[in-house]
Amino acid sequence: MNSKLLSFLEEIKAQGNMSKAAQSLFVTQPYISRVIKNAEDNFGVKLIDRSSHPIQLTYAGERLLGFLQDEHQLRANLDREMTHLSQFKYGHLTIASNEAVTNEVYKPVLLRFYDKYPKVHAQIISIPSRDAEKRLTSGSLDFFVGNPLQSPKIQYLPVARVPLVLVIPKSSALYQEGKTFVDFEELDLKQMAGESFISIPHDNTYHRLIASFLHDKGVAVEYSIEVPDVGLAAELALNHIGASIIPENYVTEDKLADAKTEDINIARIPMGMLTADFGISYIKSKQTAEPVDDLVTIISDVFKELTPKRD
Image 1: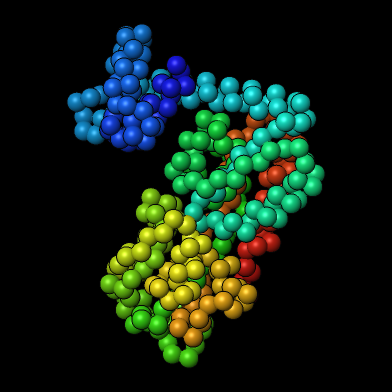
Image 2: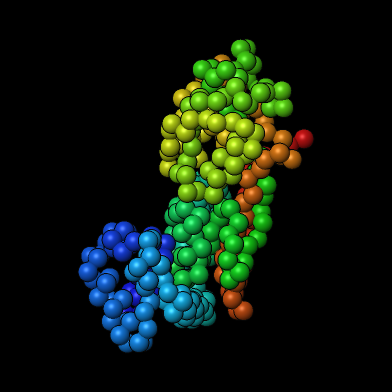
């Protein structure tokens, strides 16, 4: 029951609505209400403030949620340590990244890791940054590769400052005929006002970084195309579907060979002006096993190798 109550309280807090929480968890709203009501009767306190809109957890609800998360984390740590003590004979690691991390990172990571730990089962998933913190602290996720997370319970290891580029299609007022690479600092970005811009989901940290940068530059683009990840955004931009700001590793020579570069400009954004900071977030226990430490090192090394170097 505690695991269900934990999930329900977390989702109600995130959604601010009982029905939306039920839909997100694939259960019925009356079932969530009944579990919450039973817990309120058991503890003798109100856990949900139903008079507020959106609904919120009461102070007692927040405290209970914290205790349940701690309990769940302790259980997850216990399970993880028991697996570690069995020398990872039947170990399992779950690694996640957000929509801004290219999948090409994982091939060298897994090749190096499995060369040393062939019996460990690894699962690779993609989730938004906002979900990573919850899953790390609950123990359902071992590593998150992406933007920094804010929770004090999470250890963050910075890996790279990723340089970014602006891809400009031929339809843009900024487009310069006969050039592939153009000087970013010579561009008047305000000329992009109202132009089509390719973005990833708006609740993603990477999107907020780009949107904040454009806003600070006084640029009001039209976010007319939203795609699930930055890899697809880069592919569409390189095929002159719209403008986008993408990591520079998407515009290497081999990738540009497949694109119609005569119909686009690429402007390298100065790193002192804008970069995407990426690293590894994880819960570090007092007895972190060797395979976990090795995986952190491998991910860090691979990320640094794949990050383009600016002169």
